[in-house]
Image (cartoon, rainbow, N blue to C red; front, side, top):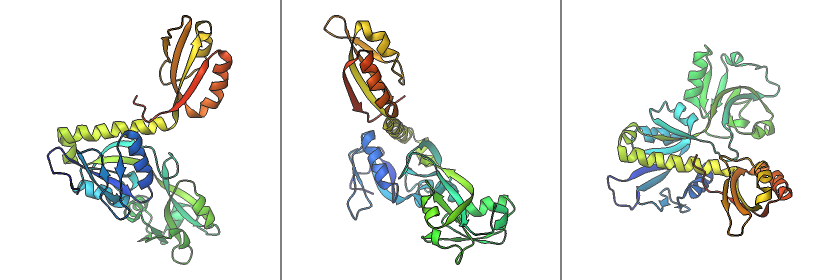
Length: 297
């Protein structure tokens, strides 16, 4: 897979190509892995001699992990379900190309369609990339529809080429732009790290996979948080600490100058603009805000 020498201590990792690629590379960088990808290459370079990798589309990732072509990979849970892949889900990774929110697969129809509920799909034609899962989902509800694979531009197919579509959405803006309305959601999905069953039984590979999972989750956790450090005179310490919220209690240490303390804390970034003026008025000085790469709970 790469020019690295094949050894027993080598983990074959799939990186998602496509919409998740750039967000994934940024996440790995925060986790401590430097990954470079050539403009025409499907073989990324990673600054970890124990890792080799391939760029694989998320739609195919779980299948290659199940078949042990890869030891582990990152993809959407929706594609694990679509492929009915027998893999180990190591952890959820709450990030995506636009937001950290889960994506949804929804049934959508033209605004003027008579289809109001899933039962109205009986005998209708549905276009989607998620063919297998959609067929199984509707079958469980006793609904017989013609589900066909869509090669792209799915939103423009109703009403001429299909009566309805099953499409993924994060915000719904693309559906609204194409004059479509959502009938129902059939799947909510997040990004997951999956491993092959054989790799997860191997002690070295399992530890390596779990190390990667820990660092990636720590990088995601750090996205919404920042560090604050400040100097606080002893007389104001109690008042300043009452203004702070954190993952754990703030770290307080004495400074060389008698009567002064150093205080350090991790806080949610969305609250920082409110906290800084409060702690300043409470007596803190020399306040420094800094970004975080990883927060490991």
